Length: 463
Ligand SMILES: *Cc1c(COP(=O)(O)O)cnc(C)c1O
Image 1 (cartoon, rainbow, N blue to C red):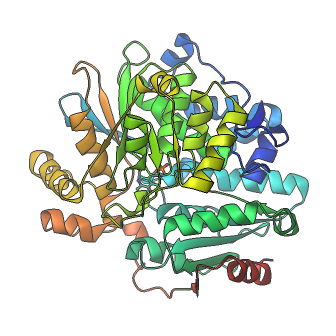
Image 2 (tube, protein in one colour; image 1 turned 45 degrees about the vertical axis):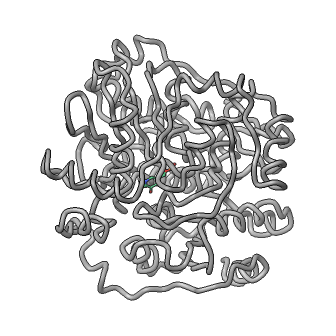
């Protein structure tokens, strides 16, 4: 399997090199040269199979010859062995033909674990084979950081630096990152927003000297290897609900557009998907772009669902590339307009090709709280504020009633106890495996929103 950049000016790479590179050298994102496909019989054969088996079947389509099949199987088995639920990503019923896909049973209680637990093990395998070391630099709005740290802590061949916006992540999120106490883990709190962190990250990757000197690698969802394991739960959820004989719809709480893009990939691979609902919080650039064609940056507003407090949704570039028939020149032009004018327009023809599949909606802060309360009142279930955004928008953009709607539950409610307590007066308890989080010592360096200062710090502390 070969990978091309959305901007067309980076080398074509295989899976291993895409994993190590993260961002393409031309500033674009890697995508497969062509989409692998599943037949209906193959999709039907996934019914009743264990999660790691399906994960292996899906991921191997993207790794190609790069990783031998027995090795990949052992990586996938080990990745999910530590999850708190034997089904890995179980479905719970929320209402008539409306389901929650629980993606928060991993070690850091958000869906990011599902991909990063695989990614950490892929790094081990590939770096050992090449006798190499990498410096992972990541930006986090809260959940990627802890999941990435958890996946690579204590590893000899990896140093990891995670930038988070100071004061804009929840205390649980921050402590999960800063209390790990492994020598290869470095936390940096930036005086700025997530978009500032992500912009610095991109600038570091676009500096060839720095990139090569430190052998930078990225774990944000700009890394294609992050998207692949996320395709799996769309496939297992559909299989459990009667797919491929019936189509299924998904509502996805969205920020960087990685998770919902994985749903698009599943559809491209042959999974019958009726619609993908892109659920935004008050930072609704994705909803505005998909409903009006006007993709325009505004300021980031802090919300109850901080992992979606994003304006620059990196993975949207992958969809733009698809919408414009994989025209890399055109995609690069749009990204230049975005950099220069903070906006671009999506042509009506291009938008029409995705509008039948993507539906987008916004959920306000008050609606987020009301939805947590309503779900608790009606079902007794406690959901987190990100999941609530997905549930609220799914309710409005449900589509045909006969088609199962699956809302992705992206985080455990105990990760956002303040918001949940405000909504229902109950403070959700952390699962036992996270006990002690509030007692452990924190380690973190505060830096200004200043690229050279951050680069100096990383250079100084990288192994
Ligand atoms: C990261 C995250 C999201 C957004 O996912 P994207 O892939 O960035 O769109 C939603 N909810 C939670 C809890 C997250 O951690």
